[in-house]
Length: 398
Image 1 (cartoon, helix red, strand yellow):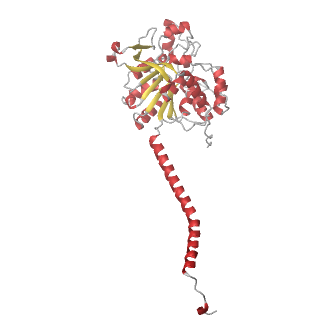
Image 2 (cartoon, helix red, strand yellow):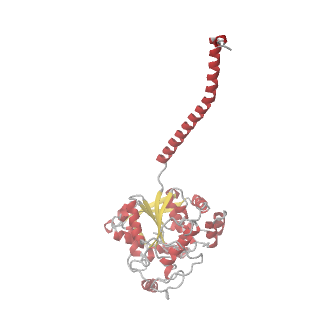
Image 3 (cartoon, rainbow, N blue to C red):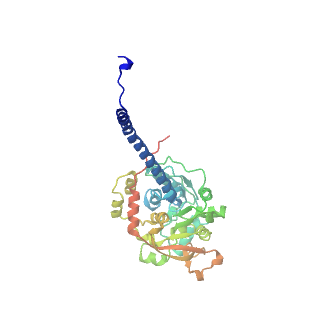
C-alpha cells in the first residue's frame, strides 16, 4: 500500500482516542497518587501526634531509695515494687544501710531480688555499716536502764542483744541463692551526692531505713539536701508508748529513728525543699494471707518470690515508696515541726513534734508533712497490679 492511498482519521476520532488514552492513564496513576498522599498525610499526622505527646507527657519522677533491705521477702524488699513498676517513675539506684540486718546481707538480698525480677539495670550502692554514734554496747546499756526495745534489727532482732557481735559478721549463704550482680564502686553517700547534682531539684529520696547514709551525704556536702527535690521517709511515729501497751509493741517501735538518732536529727534539720513522714499510718496496712493471694494470682518469678518469702507484716516501706511515687494516695496530713530526742533517757531516738508557734526554730527544726490517712483500697489495688507486672527479659549472663 502506498503512502498516498492511506486514509487519515478525522479530528473527532483523534480527540476521542486521546481522551480515552488520557483517561486510562489518569485512572491508573491517580489511585497511586492518592495512596501516596494519604500515606504522607498519615505519617505527618503521626509525627505531629508523637511530637505533641512527647511535649505534653510529664517527665518521669526521678527516685533513689535508701533502705535497710532485710530479706528475703518482707516489707524492705517489697518496697522496690511501687517504684520499679510504676511507669511514671525512673529509679536511679538503691542505697543500702545497716538497720534491720547488717549491711552486707541486706545488699546481697537486694541484688539477688533484682536478679530474680530481671532488673539488674538498676545500680546498688553499699552504705553505712554502723550508725554515727550508737553502738551495740550503748543500746545494751540503754535496755538495762530503760527497758527492752522490741525490735533491734541487726543487733538481735526480736531476741536478746546480750551476745550480739560488735562488728558486721561475714556474709551468710542466702536462702534465695547468692547474687552475681555486684554493687557499684561508690559508697552510698557519694552515689547520692553525685546523682542529686546530676539532676538538681529533680530527685525524690525515699528513705525507709535508718538515716545514716543521708546524714553522711549532708555532712560531706552541705548543699545535698537543698539540691534534692524532696525527702519521703518511713518514721516519725508518735505516741508510741501507748501504742506499745494497747497494740503490737514491735509495730509501735520507731526503729529507723532509734537505731541512729543522731543521723535522724541531722536529716530532719537539713534544708530540704519538702519532707514527708510516713509513720503510724502504715501499721494499718497488713500483708495478710488473703491479700497475698490476690497479689500472687498471676504467676511470675516476682509473685513466686513474694509467696515463698511471705512475712505477715505491715506494709511500712511499700506504702512509703507508693506515696513517693503517687502523693495522691494521701487523703489527710498535718504539718508540724519535727526533731529527734538525743538526750540519753527513755525517749532517746523518739520523734517529737511542735506546732509552728511553739517550735524551737533556732535549733534548726523544720516543717514536716505527717501522713495521717491514705486511700488504702487504691493502694492495695495498685500494689497488686504492679506486683503482677510483666518482667523484662532476663539479661544474658557473661
